View 1: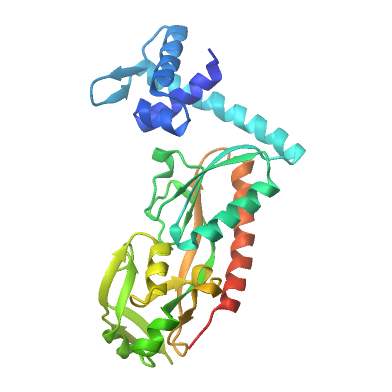
View 2: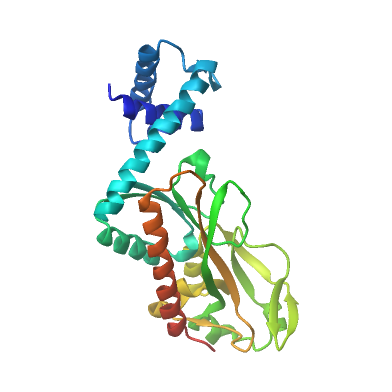
Length: 305
């Protein structure tokens, strides 16, 4: 038995409370995970978990052993990081959560460029717009399209803002016309993201704020889906320049150019710990530079009417 690997599995099971979930995250089987825990129990001569049909809880011996395992694994990670920094080669698996609002093509381009620069890193990516629980779900770093910071146990780093434009297809404008004033939008159906704020939308021009209630035609939990429906001429929609401005072939145009554009704040969050792996620092640095360059290029390419 590889005792260090078994310790890693034990620590993760203690966090998830579930053998199957841990096995899925660590790309192994529930039976293998169970055997590793049983092997540790045999080595230390004590039960680590109290098992019932629904609940998996640490025994007193398990709680004590968990504390020591965490210290051992943390010290090992620090040692590995020190060597990696000396050699300048971050490596290992990086579990990453990112929002759909960046767009599939842009997100894939980001990850491909990162992998080319750091060939010894592996990526496990979840594209999800909800606020994932980094600790519970075992992520190293999360990109968030929100200025909200709900969990004080995480380290938060603001990356920048991405402009949001109200977009429509050229075909839609040819059929229904381009609104010149915000109040005219009340006559246009809107395609929105499921996590967009409910209620009236705010538009600002010359320091004055106007509220508009759209006819909501579709709500969907994918920014790419919103873009596709807008391209099909089914309504107007708010889209980030990363998706709208860079997609010249989509023939989307930005409405109400005289009004102040909206913005979405992007940030990265990662668990607060004594040691943060070098791979996490390198990804954050890479994403910050990529974000700045990508937003600038997309904004320059956006069409307006």
